[in-house]
Length: 138
Image 1 (cartoon, rainbow, N blue to C red):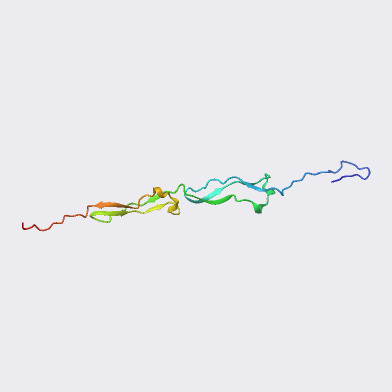
Image 2: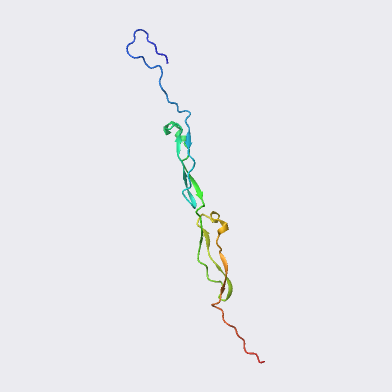
């Protein structure tokens, strides 16, 4: 601005310039997403969000980036098994079964290559007995 004195002025002249602070170009910035806080299933990821001017008040709050989001991790998912059932027969070769489940939301969360067996062959002799016929006449 221009400052002039129309005669004999007393004291210090008013300032010709004043500092100003512009926020029109300020934008939100963020760090990389952190790790998922769950090892098997749904969790939360966090990051730091900040205004690039150094003061959050300089950025438009309506445009602020998310600082948390839902995530899903399967690195800690494992297979769980029940005990084997009894053998399906009392004498001879039969089969046994057990429940196999993943600790995650579904079987796709666990590694298929290391899935434990759910069925196996078994042999039982407790119900076996000798069967005899009458002696022949010969």
